Length: 469
Ligand SMILES: C[S@@+](CC[C@H](N)C(=O)[O-])C[C@H]1O[C@@H](n2cnc3c(N)ncnc32)[C@H](O)[C@@H]1O
Image (cartoon, rainbow, N blue to C red; front, side, top):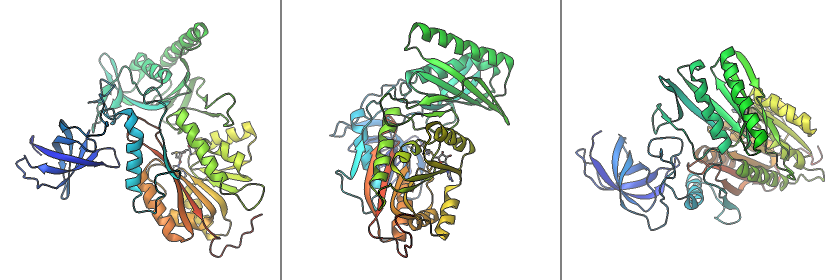
């Protein structure tokens, strides 16, 4: 590596949101050939940029923009709204104009799924743009390091494990931003480094402190914040409220105040709220999650079942029941499972609270699919929402065998989604990709949520199951 730079023309975006281009003019002592592929952080399609190289591989280079030599014709670039954008690794798309982000994300997904028979852009390949680019985020994991003056609190820097201190984060919803900042007052009871988890419903917030053991003084300091926020909320109903903090040190768990809250409580909405704490997964944005949940329900409902009662649905990676609560509306019966003990217990409580027709089971999805593939108990619809790693090729083949009508695959990683879909479609020629919808869940980052719907035309080979089973 050296300090020299290369001129690179950007023609595309990579999966991680960096620009992809080719070297136009070698300027460095290592004489990179023209045409060498270069991934460039901070660059956008159509731009000509001067790039400092951070890593060299045999066939490609990786670097970051040091100068914009020529802008793209399309209005893709904007001044970052956040003053920490050049250091903080929390958002890597602060330089992308909010109005351009959705379409660029759709392009990234199309690129990752290019080997599949993708529906053309139109009603069956769409993107749902986010209603807001800032102040939307309801869930966050911030890092801290204790300093002589208190806490350095924020996200890690770009490609670094060093915390960039952030006194105000523009993408967080205002209540969550306020609540996370309260932890500065607890610095003397916290370990030298750690994390703070936060979950907000727009007004109330719960926090989680992993690796922190109960301590009477810490508890008193937390209670002081809870009580002061409750008193402020009595005067101003818009004021944020800290409901409680869950401490988890070693095997010990200790709640100060109320450590759960009700999410997605929208008066008049058919989507029931879920109740959860800071340690289980939730989508990052309320408005886009609502659109996502409704879309998953529509895709499942459209499968039909061959009977008037609705389809039999298997839901994998159900978490605390984000989709289960609407699938129960659609299905004759829903079997919902997740590998995480706490998520399953929370889901069970939601099912009981609303009297939903959902069977809850703790299971690892890949093992469950392998077991189901050995038997002959197909499900009309299978909904899955795995973590970034996806389910892998073997589980995708098992899935093809177990589903009768539709697979609704929710993914936050279009590359592993493409791999799994390819394996699924190759395993059974009667399966087709019929719909792809991309949700811009996290503006200012290249993150996406994708829902890919696969449908079977005709019956499963060797299908012995009756529609009414
Ligand atoms: C992206 S979250 C989705 C949760 C939920 N569908 C939602 O919308 O909030 C992924 C979920 O998969 C679960 N999980 C991770 N690995 C798993 C596995 N191998 N089998 C089953 N569930 C798994 C996690 O506990 C987590 O709840």
